[in-house]
Image 1 (cartoon, helix red, strand yellow):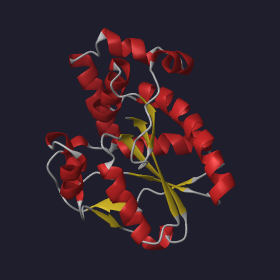
Image 2 (spheres, one colour):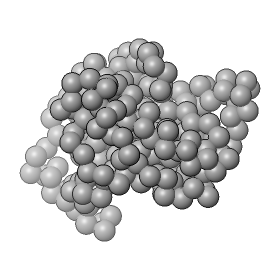
Image 3 (cartoon, helix red, strand yellow):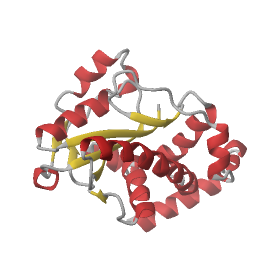
Length: 219
């Protein structure tokens, strides 16, 4: 299956070459990306932390490439920076609230979206973070959380209240035994209002998770 998706990507690249700005991002080092993309502002409701400012054109274009074209070069560069950022944040948490031996859990896609796109970009991010980490700081769990409802796009909704209402009951803890009593790092690509993270976090806590920290590439 993965081989077939790579073939599709190759064909798409041949028929629709990536534009010059994307090639430029691909060629940037991690240090260049840090210099050129501003950090995200603090999220008011503390539902999560994010690395880059999504209002920045480079950040938006890069995440679009990860999300819709599975761009492995940009994914690798972004996750290298994201990994270091997460470790800094987690270190303080580990000291003051015993946030140790966490499990990395990506925000899941619905079955229809997964079938349509062929992959879940949040899983790609989590898998790359786990690859970089090599088991030193956290374990990866791809089946802890499941999206059980197909919902209208969050981008079509006006505010956080509507988004929270739209998401209510959309997640299910698929394997409570894997997360009960454990600390969780929840991964998303973009935090907008924090509604998705909030609902996923509540689901994990109800299933017995000890603490849940939420991180995204951008906000």
